[in-house]
Amino acid sequence: MELKGLKRTTYCGLVTREFSNQEIVLEGWVNRKRNLGSLIFIDLRDREGLVQIVFKEGNEIFEIADSLKPEYCIKVKGIVKERESKNPNLYTGEIEVICDGIEIYSKSKALPFLIEEGYDVNENLKFKYRYLSLRDERCQKVFKMRNEASYAFREFLHNDGFIEISTPILNKSTPEGARDFLVPSRINKGTFYALPQSPQIYKQLLMISNFDKYYQMATCFRDEDLRANRQPEFTQVDIEMSFVDEQDVKSKMEGLIKHVFHKTIGLTIEDKFIEMSYEDCLNFYGSDKPDIRFEMKIMDMKEDFLNSEFPIFKDCIENNKEIRGIKAENSSFSRKQFDKFTEFVKNHFGAKGLVYINYKDGQIASSINKFLTEEDKGRLTEKYNLKNGDCLFIISDTKKVVLSALGALRLELANHLELLKDNKEFKFLWVTDFPLYEYSEEDGRYYAAHHPFTMPNEDDIKYFDTKEYSKIRAKAYDLVLNGEEIGGGSIRIYNDEIQKKMFEALGLSEEDVQNKFEFFVEALKYGTPPHGGIAFGFDRIVMFLTDTNDIKNVIAFPKNKKAECLLSQAPNEVSEAQLDEIGIEIKNED
Image 1: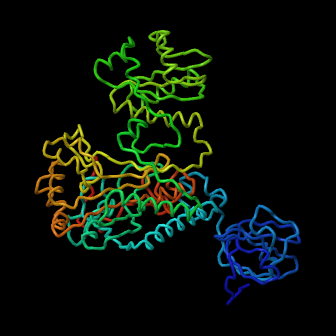
Image 2: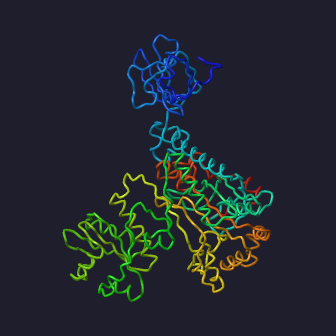
Image 3: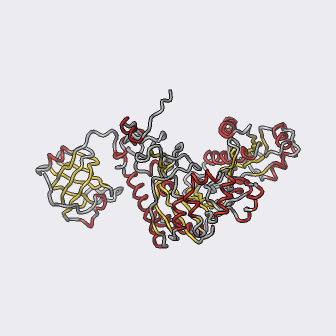
């Protein structure tokens, strides 16, 4: 039976008692069917939810209803009536639709999995049939939230005078950051475009072009190893402003993020975001993106063991290395657990070992007990205010090893002690005063810690002349939320002389600069305004808004850990004719 000319009245999930005794037309998918002999019940589903459709024996459409199977796509017409047996767990649970007309748009094969299981099935199966798993109510909610977040960003920026401008996808490769995805040119054989890791150079050119306030929801690409919060293609909310300083950018972006979280999940954030320097983040938390929802700060304990006979501590004192620790409160660890923590810091962070000092029932038990006098124990108990169940974990090594190992152990202990279980708090943190350069021992040279267009701190420009590049701080800032970086930016270099110093420190010759950045360096000579900006990881923010810990859940068609699309089978081999056309020959690795 066809219902030609009849248009959908409303969505299934929006039918309420307000529609009682009205004739409505609905379209959607068969979620479930129950045949009670003289009655057939269909749960009809669309993007807004479910509604119960009733078919009564004796009606000419009863046999059609009996033929329906899960995921048939149909249209129905009927009268809304109050249900005798109501379902309080369903938004439409007070009503049902008595059907008197039906049209089957299309049938469905037997499903590889039930739709309601599509969110949790085996990942390979879920992404092979992504169009089916996306029908699940939880996925629908995720992408509705993604839409709301996108609108909230645009709403704030548009109302504040920002102009949305698209920048090119086919760029020039400038391999100073992550690995580029390369695109061969058919017209200019032997040359390549690069997909943008970010619109960095173009956004700065737009400031030179007098657009003053720019943004875009930019698709970006990085050819790097994947993890739970990383995909090869992702979305940035890319923003740039002219005639601003660091505080201007942070203040404006704070307002933006507060607006987005309020508009999407109703969270009102009154307090100003906390700020902390890069050095303090490392020294207190062992990370440049610390989770500050709990304390457990790293403590310098070197003075406590200046006269220790414990060989490892003694070696650290003599060789000017670090002895630092963290305190876990209200804990109860077994020897087996202590051993697991030790293996964790040794295997993953290169620590030589892990010392613990456990306070229980008024006594100290320690892995270095024979090296601790009663005076030592009393002093440590008093200084660190040890109470029953408290434990000190201590690592001694180079500063880099100690901080990275303790930073990771801090998070491991928090998980073990369930410090963040059911914690729905959002803790925002601005991290500032990053180093401008990172030194590579392997390459014997400095690299830009962010990108080569980041403005140095004015107080540190003098170190260019002395070549003490490690002392130069960047006018850069990251926004961290609960231990994840959700945004990063900087004030940019707008003076070509400072830009030249930056390139020199990176070991780039005039020829290198011309080959990589000629058009940009030239643009800096035509009246560049002071400018700065930020890029927010839109996908990561949606992860927080939807309370998911895997970025693949907030991207409609994501790649797996091997950067493969199981749905489309990309990447795939192409024909010899296609390769010949662009002048490429595949090298045989054998």
